[in-house]
Length: 367
Image (cartoon, rainbow, N blue to C red; front, top):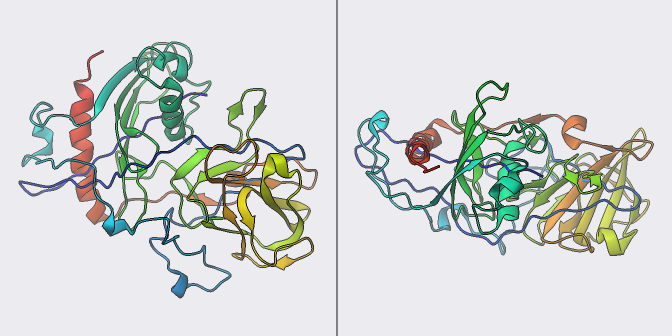
């Protein structure tokens, strides 16, 4: 599996701007849910925010709400201490001198030779972990496993970001003569979100949101449907989230079974959502009260809680999957509609300054 790196930036028009990119450090492991013997199901929630920044439990009906942020697990967005140092921006962002402010993060330049992971072997202490972080940012619009070419280059800033993903900013430069397009990504926390996410240069979020999510808040997607995993491909999607975060059905229907193949799946729930299609939730901390085979549930009802159960789970997350009438997995992002968020005008001011500063630092990374 190859790696993707995202970059962050904030921009301001004032002479002196304190860039406060909320990047608090949380030890984060690559969580994955494996595939159960009878077919794993992980679904992707449809268009909502990654942290419940635009909706509140009080403003939504039980059928519509995605659940409140877990207050005893997650800090309030405004109470999180920033890990990004103060950076004063000059009047003109085009005049930024890369050496005018010391770069607070590690800078790495990597030329692709084989996979992203192999290319990182002699460059960083934990190439598999950083490689996974890079890949998570690239898989949305490119193929980091099979689409990279020998001679392509990655320029990366890595450090504490407020979640396990270490990528502060990343620039991908394809080898001359290939059809791949260059791009940059930046880690930035949208106002109201509990965690930072990665954004392209224009303020568009790299990750796509389903129109209804099975969880209210999460750090990031750590495993897409179809991701190569040794001798198989991932059959659903994985969202890393704090243990105890409520998990909700995205469509509603009839519960067909709970806690089958439990050694592998952990606590789990399967729901028939119509026309033979099912949604499955794996590795739960526990199944919600009242959820059992034969129970009818409406869209948005809590069916369980994020956990770290089952032998294939290595960190708290929810594995969500959709199966067709024949038991074949379907990418939830193909089954449901999705969208991308964009930063607001106020967020773009800070993001642009941060982005330009990161670009200046990325330009002077030694080969």
